[in-house]
Length: 491
Ligand code: ADP
Ligand code: F6P
Image (cartoon, rainbow, N blue to C red; front, side, top):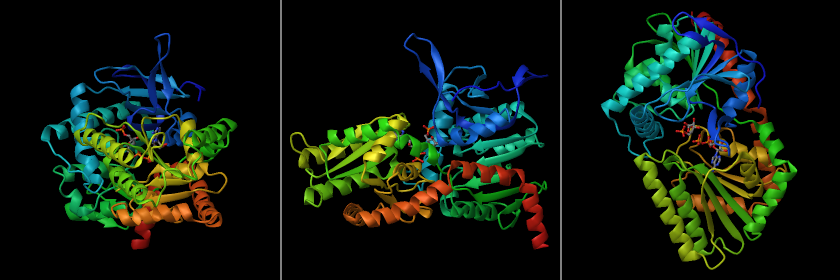
């Protein structure tokens, strides 16, 4: 991605030369990473995520801006232009990193929103820091957004921004999208600042969730904690402001993944991976961030049992697990890493022999092309989170199976399970049934695999990331008409 035209810069009476934009994305992280070149100079490289792929044309067209943290604490970075739009870094101090990001975002909200699969911790100073940082993001968005502009706030780290921003700039259209699950009422009620979080979100015109159940959880909570009027998916605040809460299942750049998977380099690399694994009959693959929500303990245990009982044979089958390092300073994540190292070591030690390890475990991040080669090389993809907002890995695998082959074993508790119904669906807590599903996927006939994969590919290609962003932004820009229409029908 290269820079096209520079977004316009206008003067602000308060700060002088400030970039402004008609379309603004606000996210905890920027879509660019700082990289150091061999000569010691630094540059910004776009991390090729689905979100930026979908929003790049909108950002370019609208001379947009992306507001986010640049990844290093205690450092102020000036705005710059990349990929044809404005990048506006927001600073975080080391203490804010510990309290707002590692603390309230990732040790309170993250586990709570994922069914409390790890125990959430609450500390008042973490919340104070969350408020301070959210206000900083809201202030920045208020400074950057042009009159009557559109601001799209992303994810659980920034749930207070919609309300804060509306107070500063009532002229704006404000959207919010939650990338992770929204918990059921009984769990959310634990959260000490529960009312503040709800009110924060209700500042948006449109609040997007991954699945309809999450939007319903949200509306039920509004009922429980406030006396605001709700009608279907519309919530009316005493000020007259109306917020819509709806589901927009996120997706991937399916065409982009397919093109990478079909490139001669990736095809050759996939063959090389299989050769390096000893040309097994079946390659099972897991690819996840190393997160306790991903069900890695249960998954590895299931494979360990299948290898030790002889249902899988290390001369014919191999399980490759790639786990990206993630949030390594948070205690639960540290413990998980040690547990997985130990579990894999124990199984390979007990079942493996010289030159053969039934589990190939890599604790690393890999480039997109290598991901596509792994997907191509895998006969059975194993995606078994205990809870997941969507799970893009499952969709990426499907997009890369250009021969309509391969099989997907997928957790019922991933948002993706609502769309990928032809996967082998499992309850990841049920290790026996997970083992049975792994074997069923392995033994399915080529015709059966093709039938399932064709249907899943149709779904993923019809509902790709452009479809997702297009639907959300359309509904955001027409939210007033939708609300008026609903009011007419009700009245
Ligand atoms: P989450 O957002 O919880 O990490 P998703 O499955 O929705 O889970 O998204 C993960 C994204 O990270 C996918 O786009 C996937 O390609 C990428 N990814 C996962 N593991 C790795 C890895 N080891 N190396 C590089 N990218 C990875
Ligand atoms: O899916 C939630 C999410 O926060 C994504 O937005 C992000 O890409 C991923 O988890 C990794 O999180 P972090 O930014 O904390 O490394």
